[in-house]
Length: 80
Ligand code: FES
Image (cartoon, rainbow, N blue to C red; front, side, top):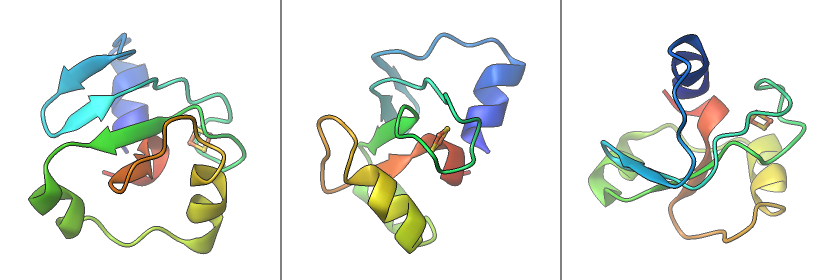
């Protein structure tokens, strides 16, 4: 996933535009187990957003807790 890629490359993604995504804060506190919302990302490219698989109920529940939720918000650990 994107989260793993960021961790592997030791990328500091806080508040940066990265390709199709605005990374508000890619904390990844729960390491992708859908138990936090620190990996919240905002997809800036709607076409890209629409190509992503729909979020699961678990992801949506966590997204509801994310700060600054938008129409095209996802959890970074769940999107490729
Ligand atoms: Fe916790 Fe994505 S890293 S939900």
